[in-house]
Amino acid sequence: MRKILAATLALVIPVAVLAGGEQTAILDVQNMTCSVCPITVKKSLQKVPGVTDAKIDFERKTATVRFDAGKADVAALVKATTEAGFPSTPRK
Image 1 (cartoon, rainbow, N blue to C red):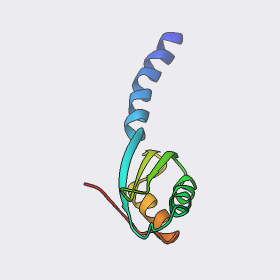
Image 2 (cartoon, rainbow, N blue to C red):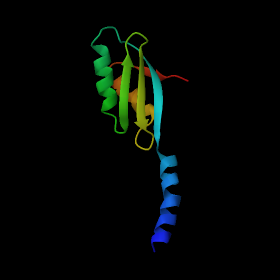
Image 3 (cartoon, rainbow, N blue to C red):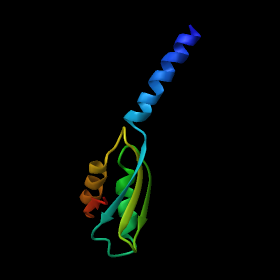
């Protein structure tokens, strides 16, 4: 019984990793004009389910976001910043 369970888990776990997994996206963020703006952008991104980290670079006007691809996607990140007043676009 344990061998069957172990074999089943060995098949299921890689599929689960492929379905989700952590990804990183870099967004170019508009409208950041003061030192408080990055705080608002970061908070908006942290509210997106699946986001594990968000680093905002005020000088470069970017947000580097780590997220669980099974729970979030780049479109959700863009939507979050845009709704907070900071339209963004993913870097390619």
